[in-house]
Length: 203
View (cartoon, rainbow, N blue to C red):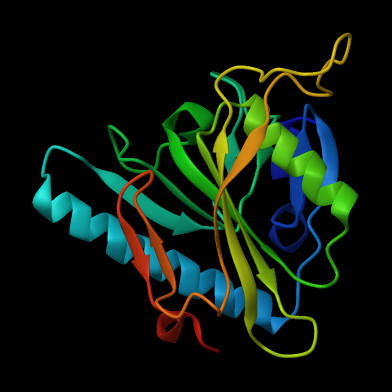
């Protein structure tokens, strides 16, 4: 399927599809908690980005949610739609967000998500060269966040056992993890200082 063919579909169908190298992939909508925590994370990242920009006016980032990220330098038939993201300010309004513009993408993982789908999507983010990937794991028995994990893109393949080759050319490495045992919440310096108390993430 091409982007042009996707645009011919009714909006309520098209907005639930990603294109992976021209192959349609259905985006399964999560429970209401999924949307609520997406909003919480987006707002917290936007606040952190604005705080950093006020101290460093030469930097310009935008935080958003459920925004298409086109993976190639041209064309629109290969894109992902992260739950939340931070990207460099674009030269003009209403421009497409390309992977090269993106600093951070994140996914809210509810109990209905499958491991294989998440790993496949994470691999596509990594192959596109997006520096930071976040996962937010929701609790299975309550409307709460279990854990937040920050992954950084590995810039070169680490040392492996003889004759072993990684499955993908690019991979993420876990660089930060926060649970409720971390009473202060998220406190991380990358890709810019991010401070998110748990009170901002309650539902």
